[in-house]
Length: 103
Image (tube, rainbow, N blue to C red; front, side, top):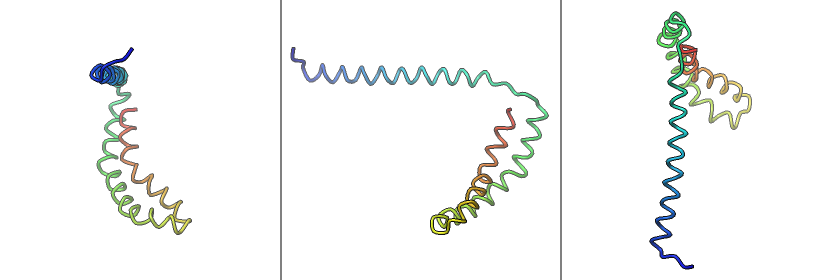
């Protein structure tokens, strides 16, 4: 049986719509899990917040500046790869502190 082009387009649209609704449902479940997070210790939060503000932003910014120059050079000079990895950990230090605030 032959279908009209508008019918085919509407079926395709419904398929895309169904996939989008399914993705929204998955995201809603993930948000529900995130709402169940509880803070373990207020002292832990304050300690890591102070480290985040006074230390990790400075370390991350310093490492980011050097990492921008070292990372492209690590392709040509292979020993710089290890240094680039250490600098990348320094760049990610604020993220680590933020995770520890709520663990």
